[in-house]
Amino acid sequence: MADQKTIHNSNRTIIFDNYMENMEERPLILISNDDGVFARGLIELIEVIRLFGDIVVVAPDSPHSGMSHAITVERPIRIHKLQQEDGLVIYSCSGTPVDCVKLACSKILERLPDFVISGINHGANTSISVLYSGTMGAAIEGSIHGIPSIGFSLDDYSHEADFTRAKKVVARIFQKVAEYGLPDGICLNVNIPKGEVKGINFCRQTRGKWMEEFEKRTDPHGRDYYWMTGYFNDAENEARDTDTFALLNGFVSVVPVTTDLTAYNAFQFMQKWKF
Image (cartoon, rainbow, N blue to C red; front, side):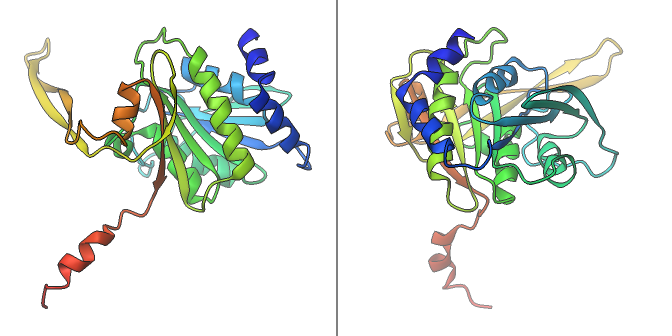
């Protein structure tokens, strides 16, 4: 608990504690993820956020990375209570990260949570990855319900990843969202560098894409299958205001995300079309 104490005694957290004094009750915070209910990143997130409110965790019972905003429609969804104690209840869910948030908001919780937090994901979710990420799917679903929501990711895929710095970042950013709120329909995509944290940058999403490559392989029964590999192609690697640039240079990237995918700048181009 030493790390919690360090966070709790920081000036920023004391400010948050003063903010909480004006609330009638401790905030109700819904936590989910896409790495599964037993993922270390989720456990570390609970440890930090528990300082700030009462937590209900509803997370997939197995890893669901890359599920984006998928929902379950062709099979039943089951939940199982794994743990209950003062200020913390943990459920596993057979569905996707978005299923977890939907079920929590409509069936499990007696009221809508004050915040939805997803993560801490093992691996970054910058640029176009926000469209594939189950971590961000859960956060975006929270914003659809009108709840201030944040998705946290650490740029480290290792199961032995060090979350010490990441937990301090989580505390600082959560405090700001709790104090100031977020615009309606907006959630935050927060990516944390693996090593030293030089600061926190507000960024835009990098324009880029994953260049998928599929390796053809053969299983022991002689049947062909494909394994996806590839690499990320940054289309603007010289730009300094992007999430990718921030992360590569040791800064936390904070990108506001909305569900409105309308390309407003295309309307003028389309005016010359005639029907």
